[in-house]
Each structure stands twice: as C-alpha cells, then as structure tokens.
Length: 253
Image 1: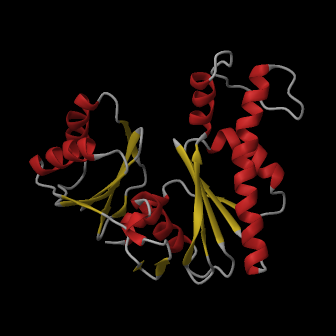
Image 2: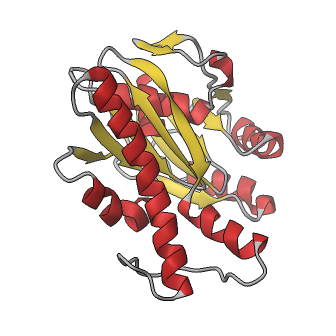
Image 3: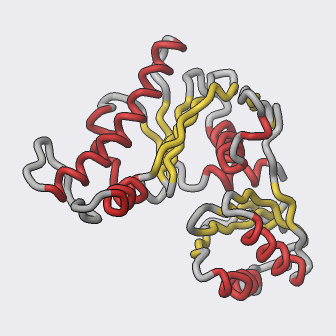
C-alpha cells in the first residue's frame, strides 16, 4: 500500500493506493494548524488503514517545517515518503514551463491526474482549482501543459480587502447583478474576479485550439464561485474532479 499526500497551504488531503485493492474511495483531510498536533493526527490516521503502508508519495507546498513533521511521523510508522517534483515529461504529459522544476509540485501532479481522466480527449483541458490560491492551467489535446494563472483564492481575496483597507469588512454572502451594499459588492466582486479569470483562459484555449475546452474544476472554493462560472460558461462542458493531485500521485504507482 502507498499513502498519498497532498499537502496544501491550509490542510492535507490523504488517501492510499493498493495494487489489488485499488484507490481508497474516501479522502481524509486534516488541518495544518496547530502544527504541534499534526504528527499525532497523521499517526492516528495511519492506524486506521486496512493494510500497513510501506511507502508514501506526496507533494508539499506548505514549506520545510511541515515536510519535516510529516517525514518524521511517517518514518516512525515504517513508511518513508518520496516528495514528487516536476519534471520535463512524465506519463505522456509534457511540462513546457520555462524552468520545468519551478512549476508547483501540486499543479504538476494535478495535471498528471487530469490527463489520466481524459486520456482520449480531443479538446483542450482547462483545470481551475479554487483553494487558498486559485490556479487555472491548460493542457493541450496532445497533453502538453501550455501554462496557467495563479491568483488569490476567494477567501484570500476577501481577507486581503479586510486586512489591507481601513473601512472594508471581511465579507461573505450572496452575489447579485448590481450590488447595493458593501458586503454584496465585495462578495460579488470576488466571485466575478474568479469567474473572469476562468473565462479568460477558456476563451484563449478555444481561440488557440479552435475547439471549446473542457473546463475541469476542483477545490474547496468551487461552491462559492460555481453559479457565476456556470452563468459565464453556459454551454461549456464542466467536470468536477474531487482530487486531481491525489489522482496524479496514484498514477505514478
């Protein structure tokens, strides 16, 4: 059994892959804060697995301290981890970043997972992941990573307005066509910014490849932006992919 870890900025997603049992149906998530509780939480989760894992594979964007805590807890359980790093090509996916090693490991694993879901797709794939940061990446029909965007995620956008201004609150709530109070204005502006960035990349993909892309979406922020994205992309095929990073890690088995 191989343990799979997607270590994000605010939480870890955990799963496993077994050569005969396949993938775990459910994915476990745990918060990174407080860090002091992370090793115990990880050991507790490991103890619930149906088979003793012998190795782990993961990506980490949370920094060196978090990586060390995870490595120590896994080593104590006899399950050393291999941190996956981007390469110029893997599993038929080509990484055309100017410096391939500088692409985020989570984005690279997600692209590998995306390619696995759509191996025979004749259309470009646009993957929008709404987390602490929102990333919007494009994969060509022949599985070449064309590039992508990084912008603050919905929650981070709201937080930046509250923390960086004197009079704007930390807002949430319903969106509307013409906001008439501050909370609506912020909530609608955040969602519109997210959906607008998605529209930009889908529009570029359609013009570049001459065919409408398949829009794939993921991340905890998706429910907040879903209605606006669907309104702006009526007629476009939209697929929700729950765990593209773990899907990519599992493909490496």
